[in-house]
Length: 194
Image (cartoon, rainbow, N blue to C red; front, side, top):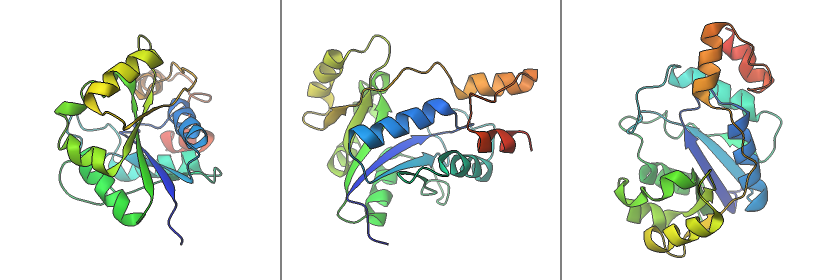
């Protein structure tokens, strides 16, 4: 397989994956003209409690979510290794899997200001550009101002529709017996009902 030239990464718990994740991934894939957008389920999270669904189940759900979209794929790079899932380590593994590719890491604008506090942010910025999605209260101008201090010359703003769906909402609805049909892709819904 010829390595992709432009590769994006959207990491997350995907606990479960929902339509908001897919919209963000699709928009980044399209707007950044990526050859491939990888959705990377977290292995061992460093900044949140362990996911409700196990790693293998979350991988199956992400695979089901991206099925049929030639530009999106699931990567097991975090779940197949031991230890905490630090973004810089993940991006280094992605770089090894796609030698010579230009890399982007996708995150929400609210996380951009915390980038200097991440594990080895300098290595992350050497490996990848940061694709930032605006959030409420975060205009493109505010993102550019923040980027100038935390990641000068390494940030691209990716506009995307705002979708008020979260994994927490989906899990809550499942617990209540409420429908989730249009909040998650069809294949994900089937796996949630197993």
